[in-house]
Length: 114
View 1: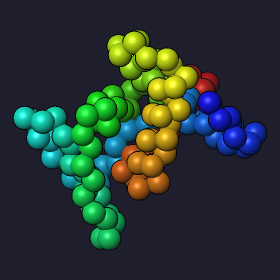
View 2: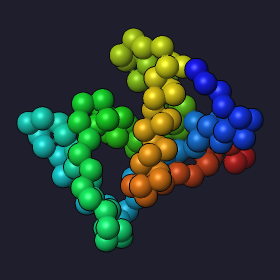
View 3: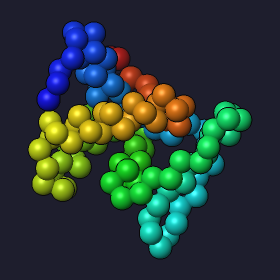
View 4: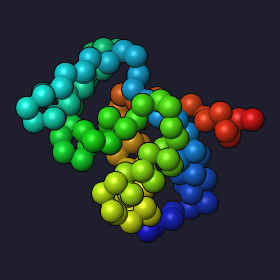
């Protein structure tokens, strides 16, 4: 796993310890047959619909605003019998893209703010 610079590692750790969840200004349509999730920002007029399928849709469903990203990664790794470091890096990259697209938001977990 590429650990990057010290600042990148700190930002990654902060994100892993954050609670991540969908923004409120979001249109979401789920295809019950395929499990695909289509997302559209309601605040970004230049935004194009984003279709999440397969693993991306599974990860999206886990971002419930209740658990830290670290806990979500741990549970996914256990459920799918995958290496937590590998899946963590992939989930972090995916979540970062959705944060940058303003489809997700984050807040510090209560455990890290007390």
